[in-house]
Image 1: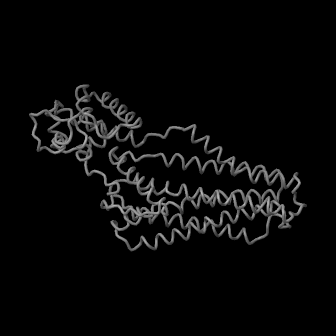
Image 2 (image 1 turned 120 degrees about the vertical axis):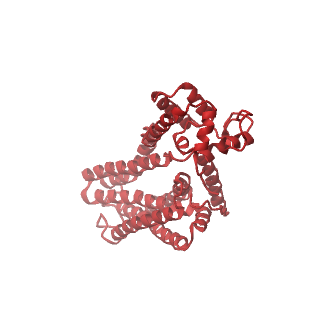
Length: 390
Protein backbone atom coordinates (compact mmCIF):
# COMPACT_ATOMS: atom_id res chain seq x y z
CA UNK A 1 0.00 0.00 0.00
CA UNK A 2 1.24 3.48 -0.71
CA UNK A 3 1.85 5.25 2.54
CA UNK A 4 -0.69 3.41 4.69
CA UNK A 5 0.13 4.74 8.18
CA UNK A 6 -0.43 2.77 11.33
CA UNK A 7 -3.75 3.30 12.99
CA UNK A 8 -2.46 3.87 16.50
CA UNK A 9 0.67 4.45 18.54
CA UNK A 10 0.67 0.76 19.44
CA UNK A 11 0.70 -0.39 15.84
CA UNK A 12 3.23 2.24 14.87
CA UNK A 13 5.81 0.99 17.32
CA UNK A 14 5.11 -2.68 17.71
CA UNK A 15 7.71 -3.56 15.07
CA UNK A 16 10.70 -2.09 16.87
CA UNK A 17 10.29 -2.82 20.59
CA UNK A 18 13.00 -4.48 22.60
CA UNK A 19 12.16 -8.02 23.82
CA UNK A 20 10.18 -8.25 27.03
CA UNK A 21 11.18 -10.25 30.06
CA UNK A 22 10.04 -13.87 29.74
CA UNK A 23 7.58 -13.43 32.60
CA UNK A 24 5.23 -11.35 30.47
CA UNK A 25 2.51 -12.81 28.32
CA UNK A 26 3.17 -12.99 24.61
CA UNK A 27 -0.51 -12.33 23.87
CA UNK A 28 -0.54 -8.69 24.95
CA UNK A 29 -0.88 -6.15 22.13
CA UNK A 30 2.17 -4.15 21.17
CA UNK A 31 4.76 -5.45 23.63
CA UNK A 32 4.01 -9.08 22.87
CA UNK A 33 4.32 -8.39 19.14
CA UNK A 34 7.78 -6.98 19.74
CA UNK A 35 8.79 -10.01 21.78
CA UNK A 36 7.75 -12.29 18.94
CA UNK A 37 9.44 -10.35 16.14
CA UNK A 38 12.78 -9.10 17.52
CA UNK A 39 15.65 -10.46 19.51
CA UNK A 40 17.59 -7.23 20.00
CA UNK A 41 16.79 -3.85 21.48
CA UNK A 42 17.80 -1.99 18.34
CA UNK A 43 14.94 -0.30 16.46
CA UNK A 44 14.45 -1.36 12.87
CA UNK A 45 13.93 2.21 11.70
CA UNK A 46 17.18 4.23 11.72
CA UNK A 47 17.00 7.43 13.73
CA UNK A 48 18.14 10.38 11.66
CA UNK A 49 19.55 13.61 13.04
CA UNK A 50 16.22 15.45 12.92
CA UNK A 51 14.43 12.64 14.80
CA UNK A 52 17.22 12.48 17.37
CA UNK A 53 16.87 16.22 18.06
CA UNK A 54 13.10 15.86 18.43
CA UNK A 55 13.55 13.00 20.90
CA UNK A 56 16.02 15.05 22.92
CA UNK A 57 13.64 18.01 22.93
CA UNK A 58 10.75 15.85 24.17
CA UNK A 59 12.99 14.31 26.81
CA UNK A 60 13.77 17.82 28.06
CA UNK A 61 10.03 18.58 28.23
CA UNK A 62 9.43 15.46 30.35
CA UNK A 63 12.25 16.39 32.71
CA UNK A 64 10.80 19.87 33.11
CA UNK A 65 7.45 18.26 33.99
CA UNK A 66 9.06 16.33 36.84
CA UNK A 67 9.08 12.88 35.24
CA UNK A 68 11.74 10.71 36.82
CA UNK A 69 14.80 9.51 34.91
CA UNK A 70 13.84 5.88 35.45
CA UNK A 71 10.50 6.44 33.74
CA UNK A 72 12.18 8.26 30.84
CA UNK A 73 14.57 5.34 30.50
CA UNK A 74 11.69 2.86 30.27
CA UNK A 75 10.00 4.99 27.58
CA UNK A 76 13.29 5.25 25.73
CA UNK A 77 13.81 1.48 25.80
CA UNK A 78 10.30 1.01 24.42
CA UNK A 79 10.89 3.64 21.67
CA UNK A 80 8.19 5.88 23.08
CA UNK A 81 9.99 9.22 23.00
CA UNK A 82 7.54 10.56 20.45
CA UNK A 83 4.56 12.56 21.77
CA UNK A 84 2.21 11.33 19.03
CA UNK A 85 2.88 7.68 19.89
CA UNK A 86 2.45 8.30 23.60
CA UNK A 87 -0.91 9.97 23.04
CA UNK A 88 -2.14 7.07 20.91
CA UNK A 89 -1.21 4.05 23.06
CA UNK A 90 -4.06 2.05 24.58
CA UNK A 91 -5.01 1.25 28.18
CA UNK A 92 -3.55 -2.23 27.84
CA UNK A 93 -0.27 -0.67 26.73
CA UNK A 94 -0.31 1.52 29.83
CA UNK A 95 -0.81 -1.58 31.95
CA UNK A 96 2.29 -3.07 30.42
CA UNK A 97 4.25 0.14 31.09
CA UNK A 98 3.16 -0.11 34.73
CA UNK A 99 4.53 -3.65 34.76
CA UNK A 100 7.85 -2.32 33.47
CA UNK A 101 8.12 0.11 36.38
CA UNK A 102 6.22 3.23 35.33
CA UNK A 103 4.24 4.49 38.37
CA UNK A 104 0.47 4.69 37.85
CA UNK A 105 0.48 8.28 39.09
CA UNK A 106 2.85 9.31 36.30
CA UNK A 107 0.37 8.62 33.50
CA UNK A 108 -1.34 12.02 33.66
CA UNK A 109 2.01 13.81 33.85
CA UNK A 110 3.37 11.84 30.90
CA UNK A 111 0.22 12.55 28.87
CA UNK A 112 0.43 16.26 29.67
CA UNK A 113 4.08 16.27 28.62
CA UNK A 114 3.13 14.53 25.37
CA UNK A 115 0.52 17.20 24.64
CA UNK A 116 3.07 19.94 25.24
CA UNK A 117 5.71 18.08 23.24
CA UNK A 118 3.37 17.66 20.28
CA UNK A 119 2.48 21.36 20.37
CA UNK A 120 6.17 22.31 20.44
CA UNK A 121 6.85 19.92 17.56
CA UNK A 122 4.01 21.25 15.41
CA UNK A 123 4.85 24.90 16.07
CA UNK A 124 8.59 24.57 15.48
CA UNK A 125 10.01 27.27 13.21
CA UNK A 126 11.93 26.21 10.12
CA UNK A 127 15.57 27.29 10.65
CA UNK A 128 17.14 29.64 8.13
CA UNK A 129 19.26 27.93 5.51
CA UNK A 130 22.31 29.60 3.97
CA UNK A 131 22.23 27.02 1.18
CA UNK A 132 18.65 27.86 0.22
CA UNK A 133 19.36 31.59 0.26
CA UNK A 134 22.42 31.16 -1.96
CA UNK A 135 20.43 29.08 -4.44
CA UNK A 136 17.56 31.58 -4.40
CA UNK A 137 19.74 34.65 -4.91
CA UNK A 138 21.71 32.90 -7.65
CA UNK A 139 18.52 31.86 -9.44
CA UNK A 140 17.13 35.39 -9.22
CA UNK A 141 20.32 36.87 -10.66
CA UNK A 142 20.51 34.31 -13.46
CA UNK A 143 16.96 35.04 -14.61
CA UNK A 144 17.53 38.80 -14.29
CA UNK A 145 20.74 38.81 -16.34
CA UNK A 146 19.17 38.27 -19.81
CA UNK A 147 16.85 41.31 -19.66
CA UNK A 148 19.62 43.36 -18.06
CA UNK A 149 22.15 42.50 -20.77
CA UNK A 150 19.64 42.93 -23.61
CA UNK A 151 18.44 46.21 -22.13
CA UNK A 152 21.98 47.58 -21.83
CA UNK A 153 22.81 46.47 -25.36
CA UNK A 154 19.65 48.18 -26.56
CA UNK A 155 20.78 51.43 -24.91
CA UNK A 156 24.55 51.43 -25.50
CA UNK A 157 25.57 48.35 -27.48
CA UNK A 158 26.05 47.67 -31.17
CA UNK A 159 22.48 46.30 -31.46
CA UNK A 160 20.60 49.30 -30.17
CA UNK A 161 17.07 50.39 -30.98
CA UNK A 162 18.26 51.89 -34.29
CA UNK A 163 20.02 48.76 -35.56
CA UNK A 164 18.02 46.12 -37.43
CA UNK A 165 19.24 42.53 -37.21
CA UNK A 166 20.46 40.84 -40.37
CA UNK A 167 19.47 37.27 -41.15
CA UNK A 168 22.79 35.92 -39.83
CA UNK A 169 22.60 38.04 -36.70
CA UNK A 170 19.04 36.91 -36.16
CA UNK A 171 20.12 33.28 -36.36
CA UNK A 172 23.08 33.73 -34.01
CA UNK A 173 21.54 36.14 -31.50
CA UNK A 174 17.90 35.07 -31.50
CA UNK A 175 17.09 31.69 -33.09
CA UNK A 176 19.87 29.51 -31.66
CA UNK A 177 19.91 30.95 -28.12
CA UNK A 178 16.09 31.04 -28.12
CA UNK A 179 15.88 27.34 -28.96
CA UNK A 180 18.59 26.52 -26.42
CA UNK A 181 16.73 28.52 -23.75
CA UNK A 182 13.54 26.56 -24.32
CA UNK A 183 15.39 23.24 -24.30
CA UNK A 184 16.82 24.17 -20.89
CA UNK A 185 13.32 25.03 -19.67
CA UNK A 186 11.98 21.75 -21.02
CA UNK A 187 14.72 19.80 -19.22
CA UNK A 188 13.93 21.71 -16.02
CA UNK A 189 10.24 20.82 -16.18
CA UNK A 190 10.86 17.20 -17.16
CA UNK A 191 13.47 16.72 -14.46
CA UNK A 192 11.74 18.46 -11.56
CA UNK A 193 8.05 17.81 -12.15
CA UNK A 194 7.83 14.88 -9.74
CA UNK A 195 8.96 16.92 -6.73
CA UNK A 196 5.52 18.46 -6.10
CA UNK A 197 3.52 15.26 -6.43
CA UNK A 198 6.08 13.34 -4.35
CA UNK A 199 5.75 15.87 -1.51
CA UNK A 200 1.97 15.40 -1.52
CA UNK A 201 2.30 11.62 -1.49
CA UNK A 202 4.84 11.53 1.33
CA UNK A 203 3.55 14.23 3.68
CA UNK A 204 -0.23 13.75 3.47
CA UNK A 205 -2.00 13.35 6.79
CA UNK A 206 -3.67 10.15 7.90
CA UNK A 207 -7.14 9.75 6.43
CA UNK A 208 -6.66 12.46 3.82
CA UNK A 209 -8.19 11.69 0.44
CA UNK A 210 -5.38 11.76 -2.10
CA UNK A 211 -7.97 11.97 -4.86
CA UNK A 212 -9.60 15.11 -3.44
CA UNK A 213 -6.25 16.72 -2.64
CA UNK A 214 -5.03 16.31 -6.22
CA UNK A 215 -8.38 17.44 -7.66
CA UNK A 216 -8.17 20.64 -5.64
CA UNK A 217 -4.54 21.24 -6.58
CA UNK A 218 -5.16 20.66 -10.28
CA UNK A 219 -8.17 22.97 -10.23
CA UNK A 220 -6.26 25.78 -8.52
CA UNK A 221 -3.19 25.43 -10.72
CA UNK A 222 -5.35 25.31 -13.85
CA UNK A 223 -7.17 28.50 -12.87
CA UNK A 224 -3.94 30.36 -12.07
CA UNK A 225 -2.36 29.19 -15.32
CA UNK A 226 -5.40 30.27 -17.33
CA UNK A 227 -5.41 33.74 -15.76
CA UNK A 228 -1.72 34.24 -16.49
CA UNK A 229 -2.18 32.86 -19.99
CA UNK A 230 -4.78 35.50 -20.86
CA UNK A 231 -2.30 38.24 -19.91
CA UNK A 232 0.58 36.66 -21.84
CA UNK A 233 -1.47 36.10 -24.99
CA UNK A 234 -2.67 39.71 -24.84
CA UNK A 235 0.94 40.93 -24.59
CA UNK A 236 1.89 38.79 -27.58
CA UNK A 237 -0.80 40.38 -29.73
CA UNK A 238 -0.41 44.03 -28.76
CA UNK A 239 2.35 46.43 -29.79
CA UNK A 240 5.97 45.59 -28.99
CA UNK A 241 8.09 47.84 -26.74
CA UNK A 242 9.86 49.21 -29.84
CA UNK A 243 8.34 50.55 -33.03
CA UNK A 244 10.49 48.21 -35.15
CA UNK A 245 10.10 44.49 -34.48
CA UNK A 246 13.44 43.47 -36.03
CA UNK A 247 15.45 44.95 -33.14
CA UNK A 248 17.23 42.68 -30.65
CA UNK A 249 15.16 43.80 -27.66
CA UNK A 250 11.86 43.37 -29.51
CA UNK A 251 12.82 39.89 -30.67
CA UNK A 252 13.76 38.71 -27.18
CA UNK A 253 10.66 40.32 -25.72
CA UNK A 254 8.62 38.02 -27.93
CA UNK A 255 10.82 34.98 -27.17
CA UNK A 256 10.25 35.40 -23.44
CA UNK A 257 6.51 35.76 -23.99
CA UNK A 258 6.35 32.62 -26.13
CA UNK A 259 8.53 30.78 -23.60
CA UNK A 260 5.98 31.77 -20.97
CA UNK A 261 2.93 31.01 -23.09
CA UNK A 262 3.92 27.42 -23.95
CA UNK A 263 4.30 26.05 -20.37
CA UNK A 264 1.19 27.94 -19.27
CA UNK A 265 -0.79 26.32 -22.09
CA UNK A 266 0.63 22.95 -21.03
CA UNK A 267 -0.32 23.61 -17.40
CA UNK A 268 -3.93 24.42 -18.25
CA UNK A 269 -4.37 21.56 -20.71
CA UNK A 270 -2.69 18.95 -18.49
CA UNK A 271 -4.72 20.02 -15.46
CA UNK A 272 -7.92 19.60 -17.45
CA UNK A 273 -6.89 16.21 -18.85
CA UNK A 274 -5.84 14.82 -15.47
CA UNK A 275 -9.06 16.05 -13.88
CA UNK A 276 -11.04 14.45 -16.69
CA UNK A 277 -9.62 11.02 -15.97
CA UNK A 278 -9.48 11.19 -12.16
CA UNK A 279 -13.01 12.56 -11.74
CA UNK A 280 -14.95 9.26 -12.18
CA UNK A 281 -12.56 7.21 -10.01
CA UNK A 282 -13.08 6.17 -6.41
CA UNK A 283 -10.30 6.52 -3.83
CA UNK A 284 -8.69 3.16 -4.53
CA UNK A 285 -8.64 3.59 -8.31
CA UNK A 286 -7.48 7.22 -7.97
CA UNK A 287 -4.54 6.13 -5.86
CA UNK A 288 -3.51 3.64 -8.53
CA UNK A 289 -3.97 6.25 -11.26
CA UNK A 290 -1.97 8.93 -9.43
CA UNK A 291 0.80 6.48 -8.64
CA UNK A 292 1.07 5.40 -12.28
CA UNK A 293 1.32 9.02 -13.52
CA UNK A 294 3.06 10.66 -10.58
CA UNK A 295 5.22 12.81 -12.85
CA UNK A 296 2.24 14.21 -14.75
CA UNK A 297 0.45 15.27 -11.57
CA UNK A 298 3.42 17.45 -10.58
CA UNK A 299 4.04 19.01 -13.98
CA UNK A 300 1.25 21.66 -14.09
CA UNK A 301 2.58 23.38 -10.97
CA UNK A 302 6.18 23.51 -12.19
CA UNK A 303 5.07 24.54 -15.69
CA UNK A 304 3.17 27.48 -14.18
CA UNK A 305 6.26 28.55 -12.24
CA UNK A 306 8.40 28.32 -15.40
CA UNK A 307 5.79 30.42 -17.19
CA UNK A 308 6.11 33.10 -14.51
CA UNK A 309 9.90 32.95 -14.75
CA UNK A 310 9.62 33.92 -18.43
CA UNK A 311 6.77 36.36 -18.03
CA UNK A 312 8.72 38.57 -15.61
CA UNK A 313 11.79 39.05 -17.91
CA UNK A 314 9.38 39.93 -20.74
CA UNK A 315 7.87 42.64 -18.55
CA UNK A 316 11.35 43.91 -17.77
CA UNK A 317 12.23 44.14 -21.48
CA UNK A 318 9.00 46.00 -22.18
CA UNK A 319 9.94 48.60 -19.57
CA UNK A 320 13.50 48.79 -20.97
CA UNK A 321 12.11 49.47 -24.44
CA UNK A 322 9.45 52.00 -23.46
CA UNK A 323 11.03 53.86 -20.53
CA UNK A 324 14.75 53.33 -21.05
CA UNK A 325 17.64 52.74 -18.68
CA UNK A 326 16.47 54.11 -15.28
CA UNK A 327 13.15 52.28 -15.09
CA UNK A 328 14.64 49.24 -16.82
CA UNK A 329 17.37 48.80 -14.20
CA UNK A 330 14.89 49.13 -11.35
CA UNK A 331 12.50 46.65 -12.97
CA UNK A 332 15.32 44.17 -13.53
CA UNK A 333 16.33 44.47 -9.87
CA UNK A 334 12.74 43.96 -8.71
CA UNK A 335 12.29 40.95 -10.99
CA UNK A 336 15.41 39.41 -9.47
CA UNK A 337 13.91 39.81 -5.98
CA UNK A 338 10.62 38.30 -7.12
CA UNK A 339 12.21 35.24 -8.71
CA UNK A 340 14.45 34.80 -5.68
CA UNK A 341 11.39 34.80 -3.41
CA UNK A 342 9.65 32.10 -5.49
CA UNK A 343 12.70 29.81 -5.42
CA UNK A 344 13.33 30.38 -1.71
CA UNK A 345 9.70 29.71 -0.78
CA UNK A 346 9.60 26.45 -2.72
CA UNK A 347 12.93 25.33 -1.22
CA UNK A 348 11.63 25.76 2.33
CA UNK A 349 8.17 24.33 1.65
CA UNK A 350 9.57 21.19 0.05
CA UNK A 351 11.68 20.37 3.12
CA UNK A 352 8.81 20.51 5.62
CA UNK A 353 7.82 17.19 7.13
CA UNK A 354 4.46 16.36 8.66
CA UNK A 355 5.05 16.10 12.42
CA UNK A 356 2.05 13.79 12.83
CA UNK A 357 3.56 11.01 10.71
CA UNK A 358 5.78 8.53 12.50
CA UNK A 359 9.26 7.80 11.18
CA UNK A 360 8.42 4.29 10.01
CA UNK A 361 5.58 5.59 7.83
CA UNK A 362 7.78 8.37 6.43
CA UNK A 363 10.47 5.91 5.39
CA UNK A 364 7.89 3.54 3.91
CA UNK A 365 6.32 6.29 1.84
CA UNK A 366 9.70 7.53 0.64
CA UNK A 367 10.65 4.06 -0.56
CA UNK A 368 7.38 3.68 -2.41
CA UNK A 369 7.50 7.11 -4.05
CA UNK A 370 11.08 6.45 -5.18
CA UNK A 371 9.84 3.33 -6.94
CA UNK A 372 6.97 5.26 -8.53
CA UNK A 373 9.32 8.00 -9.74
CA UNK A 374 11.71 5.42 -11.17
CA UNK A 375 8.82 3.77 -13.01
CA UNK A 376 7.67 7.15 -14.33
CA UNK A 377 11.15 7.94 -15.66
CA UNK A 378 11.51 4.54 -17.32
CA UNK A 379 8.03 4.57 -18.79
CA UNK A 380 6.72 1.69 -16.66
CA UNK A 381 3.54 1.75 -14.65
CA UNK A 382 3.56 0.54 -11.07
CA UNK A 383 0.03 0.52 -9.75
CA UNK A 384 0.18 0.48 -5.95
CA UNK A 385 -2.47 -1.12 -3.82
CA UNK A 386 -4.83 1.34 -2.18
CA UNK A 387 -4.59 2.07 1.52
CA UNK A 388 -8.09 3.37 2.09
CA UNK A 389 -7.15 6.96 1.42
CA UNK A 390 -4.59 7.11 4.23
